[in-house]
Image (cartoon, rainbow, N blue to C red):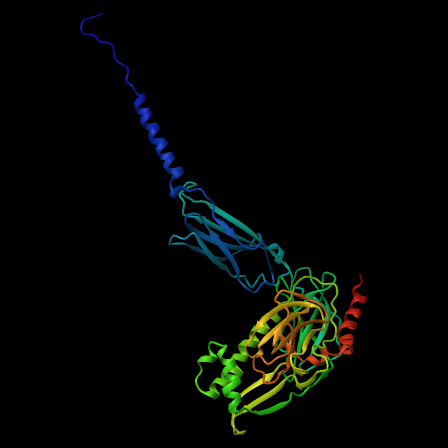
Length: 461
């Protein structure tokens, strides 16, 4: 070896490679763990299909685990594209509802089934080469312009003002959505009966209305609607009008006692003002409670329904009729101080006479109810309810099943009652009706039982 010569040392490159590897691992770790590079897909919640007859905009829910970025909704038939809506979320937002307007050129189109709606949304992630995570959802357009078919199978022979009636009918549609009856501006539910597509409903003619229009309404999922007019031979009943004077004894006795049980009425100052608060405001609130309980109706299909004529009090005398329009005055008959309507029958017998439920049912309420005093209320099914006011004692509890002929209470003077008597009320789907019909077995046989029998022959087993 020559003097002064040293062999060349190899450069060590592995430390640099290690540093580079660590940098790459660090970058990869940052990308994989940083929210800016999250990989969670946005979520689109919307209906699977839309009917071409749709008139309302389509609601779509967009969600992302970090932040929504942009969205677009496009209608397409393969050759034409209609951008219904699009936008950008400038502020950080994880969830938002967008409204997609339905183009008029697609509505009711015979070629509607060729169209689709594509919803796309992407988030603000830098994943996917800075493009973000993108989610799409395709909604198909379904053509349906045919309204449901409605056919009446049987109905009550007549309908009286303040009275009740039964209608059994058939409503058919591949996508039936809602079925109900409008009577006097009030919506009455129709209950599925015996087989799919068949319905039955007890309806009422509100006693305050001198005339009514009745329609069966059927609406499908697409929004197509059928409104079939129903007519009855009508029986017109005039409501009695009474003028009743109130005495000092009544104002200082019964009215004060009843008002004490109501937080608002008890605070009213002045004898006449307190009477008005009890006779009107308190009465309205008490009746709202009654309507609430009497409006409940099961949507389950039923196969049959029967009730017996109601005779709640034996050897009783009718002392007040249904629908009476009562005007109250104090000393001067020309000066009315309050007005109310009597929405039941008042029966009087002996003191604390036994009250009977003529038909089986379920007790839905058994408590104090203002002017009605102690008041049990029974659900007899199919939207028919009975109530028994002013009782001295109740012999049933809420939720109890009662049998026909069972004694449920005893008459009394609780609530706004001066003498021992029973206030007997009947309601159809929350509407007070004339009890007289339901106290006559021949009326029930003719207008309820025979109607069901006629419909059953058509429907079959």
